[in-house]
Length: 145
Image (cartoon, rainbow, N blue to C red; front, side, top):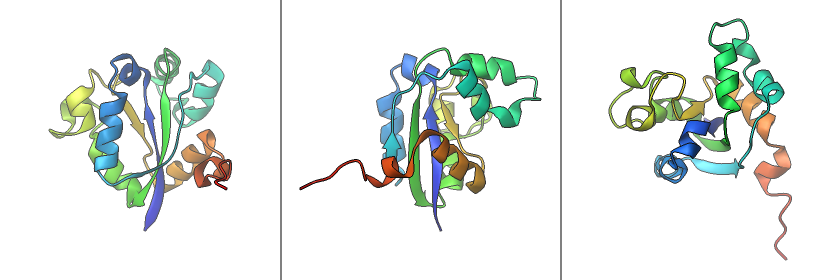
């Protein structure tokens, strides 16, 4: 089934200038990029996005880290996009990630783990809509005449 998922290249990724390498890996894995933008999230925006984690002990540090620099949200589409993207990026803790995954190769810690990936089809739908309008994803803003 064709699915959408959201990737976010986190501030550690952009600070390390790894965005191009990570995007290349995503494209080489067969994902279609439907939308991509550079953003600097505020505490309110990051807090709302990660609201599902609000009661967890790492929530405040996650929001603070997310706001520490620029991020690149990317709307992706592919057959089995959510599961395939989770496999491509690897476990949240880079020490537990499989060799050759994005997090194993580039991340420095559980918090600074380079990239976010939706954890379910439902989350993917919500997260893509959080950052992108349908017009942005379908190219309705661009006309070729």
